[in-house]
Amino acid sequence: MCPLSTLHHLSQADSKSSKGTKAGNGSSSYSSSYSMSYGPPTPPVTDPPTPKPTRSTLPPTTPPTPAPSPICCNPADLEELILSNVYNGDIETTFDEDPAKSAMEWLAEDACGCGFCTELQLIQRYILAVLYYSTGGPNWTKCGDAASDATCQVQSAYGNSEGFNWLTCNSECDWGGTDCREDDESGRLRVIDVENNGLNGKLPPEITALSKSLVVLALEQNQLQGPIPSSYGGLDKLAVLDLDFNDLTGSLFDLRNMEKLQQLDLNANSLTGSIEGLGWDLTSLKFIDLSYNKFTGTIAPEIGNLDDLTSLQVQCNEFDPPLQFVKCPSKILAADDVICDNVATNCTCTNSTSAAQCDEGP
Image 1 (tube, one colour):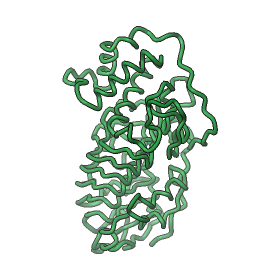
Image 2 (cartoon, helix red, strand yellow):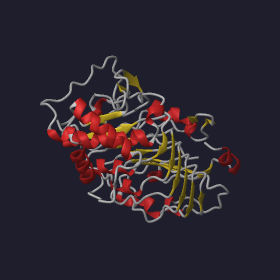
Image 3 (cartoon, helix red, strand yellow):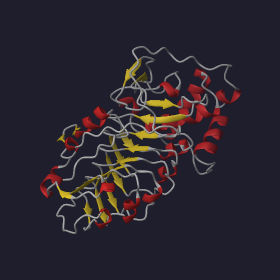
Image 4 (spheres, helix red, strand yellow):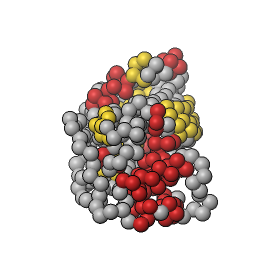
């Protein structure tokens, strides 16, 4: 195997090293050989935020002033606002079924009672409520007790590792695992980072409506199922997408609009299909981990055009050799067991994972 990269990972070193163990699955066969810790890039502000320190005390968020406007206490107006800004005015979209139904019912009560009532706050709080109800929020390990205004601690490298329970009368910027922009007074949500917290359900497409501000979406080491919504390809400010160690299925979405994406971490799922023609070379990717999935076909040759790519992990899939785009030797790889580091410095590819090890899982 070629020497390990010295590039720093986009998330905390101890956070990524801890990912080697998945509940019930033992230690990872690859993460023990990677001790990378990527720090966030320097400004502009759309780059990944600096991981936040744990706060020992956190006073309750003061509700905004002035008093709630009439829209806050008018369910019909709230529905119209959400339909226009989250669902693009789709007249077929209704709030008759969960998770939208529960999220809308909560928002109607929350907006009138808590006073977080600007259009931005209403939209962000609704989208987070949809995520909460989509993933069994009341049963989360931590930060899911909407009836308690107490603080909670959650594993979160970029968001509030200590924050308030979700869906409480505190700013959505202060809930556990979230964070908003600190460089202006807009309060735009830039981080959703709730790791290893018992999230169980499907990823909601409503998150796409945060495309103007969301920089980090990290929901790794949970029990998320189903496909990654194709609309996530519209999150054009996103720098970090980390969904590894879940039960996600389906194919990978188009990346050509994700110019700022630097970290794509999807290992240890059950994703399928081809990864060719997705616009890889239009991103800013430095770190790609697609290992331990069921991808097929050939490795997208445009990945070789990523000037800043330093780590590519594709072992334990069903790709067709050879991997010529990284100038590696042409050879048959029984289990697609390839780890390539330092691509820019002419790495060598190594059969570091046997077919039996792939069957055992990460």
